[in-house]
Image 1 (cartoon, rainbow, N blue to C red):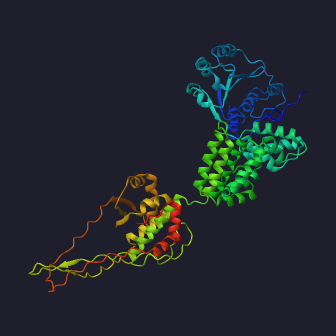
Image 2 (cartoon, rainbow, N blue to C red; image 1 turned 90 degrees about the vertical axis):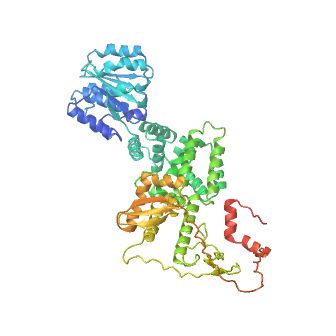
Amino acid sequence: MSYVVIARRWRPQRFEELVGQEHVSVTLRNAIKNNRIGHAYLFVGPRGVGKTSTARILAKALNCEKGPTPVPCGECPVCTNIADGASLDVVEIDAASNNSVDDVRSLQEHISLAPMGGRYRIYIIDEVHMLSKPAFNAFLKTLEEPPAHAIFVLATTEVHKIPPTIISRCQRFDFRPIAGPNIIKRLQQICEAEEVPTEDEALAMIARAGAGSMRDAQTLLEEVITFSPERIVEQSVVEVLGTAPRSTLIEMLNAVAQGHGKNAVEIIDRLAQDGKDLGQVTSDLMNLVRDVLIIRIGGEVVSLSGAGDHEKGVLQGIGQHFEPTDLIALIEDLSWLTSSFRNLLSGRIALESLLVKTAQMRGEVSIEKVIRKIASIEDHLRQSAGSGSPPGAGAGSPQEDLFGGSAKSVSEPTPPPIPKPVERASTPESSSQMVVREEPPKQAEKPPSGKPTKETVWKRTLELIEEEKSLLHPPLSGAVPVELTEKSIEIEFQGMNGWIRSCLEKRENLAVIEKCLSEAAEKPLKLSWHEGTPPPEEPVELVEEEAPETDALPSVQEPEPAPSSADLREALNDPVVQKAISLFKGIIVTQ
């Protein structure tokens, strides 16, 4: 007898042997058990997940000598003939090559024939989406009202190409891609039966390469066994697949995380010299970055692409060097590069450029960090102005380095004094003199004891918003609380642009803000806002006063002397100024 490949020898023969399709097998078994058998079924799903195998098991369950039964015996002549593909009552049609109206008419002529040895005649039409539109139209009536002994099973990988009129006449079952652990378990059973020792990492690589297809994984396992019949190890799978070991991919990604683009390029050169498929390397690297992203955001319940416990610790360390947005951007770039790798003049150059660019970005400050830091400085200055304390006092002062480090002590310029109201007194000689009128300082309004003020509630709300959804903090940081009632708080914007308005009008953003408001006030609060106008300048009250008799001319204020060159050098050597010049690519302009 000729050799039969693993994928055919290990094809499921009973519903219980279907892997990863329990929702289909349970439904079909209950239908047979309760005598609720349909006349047409539509099996939808990717390749290699068990559509045709399920159709054959259904045929055996219906025509078995001990049936109809949810558990076919597999020993009677009917079951063995169906398993061998020799049954006259199971007709398998390839719609890719029999897709014309004439083929459908030929099928209609044979449908009226009674079964040869079983109860039903089952027609399995594979890749049914390949039928032409006229063929679908000719098939409609037969599919809707077939003879009592005829059952149709339509299988397809592209259900969107099937007319809705065909889908509505069938019971639809969606087959899912098979999970990696289920594929690994099945491959272990095959290797034990074949008496071939294996390594767990080798089977994990085969399962990842199968991409949810059991048939693809079994076919690859057959190649690896042929390549290395004594023992299946990771290196054997790497040689057959033509890809890079996962440890090499981790080394490459770690070099990028550390900002060492040179090391990443050297690894790519080594892989190219070894004859590895750089397109497959790019795809595997994308899956690895995805695992790092899942670990970085704390998705412990999400399955990773074959990462063990030790490897998870390594990936967690790599993820600390990236922001989630950086990982998402890298995945998008790798996804585009994977899909268009074959069409590029040099996919290797594109991959090298991408990794070097990502490595160089490790030393730069993200715009999100700059926005958050500027917002925190503005908030600190606003609090300092309200409390009367100097801006540089206390922790978290604006003198702290903008980019996370501790800046050297920098003397800040003293703010100009607030002009005081002046009076002008009238004299008989119509001469005038400016007289300063001192105003008593205003007493700060003290809130009732035990009740939070609108300022404290809004300040706490901004802190919660920065933790909950940091992108909402910058547009709200410029708002000023106006009124706090038992049910709402009203804020005012001195200058509301379109960006701020669009943020506030989004329902999900408003829900986040009101949630933080309620938590800050410890009671439910609604938010209302309006656009304010800049306060008008208070007019200066002038009172004429008799000028003293003097012949002295009014003094003229001398212009301030220009800063010396030593002062300019000291300012330019300030670390904060140097950092700002480097970040914004600035130049020094002197007059």
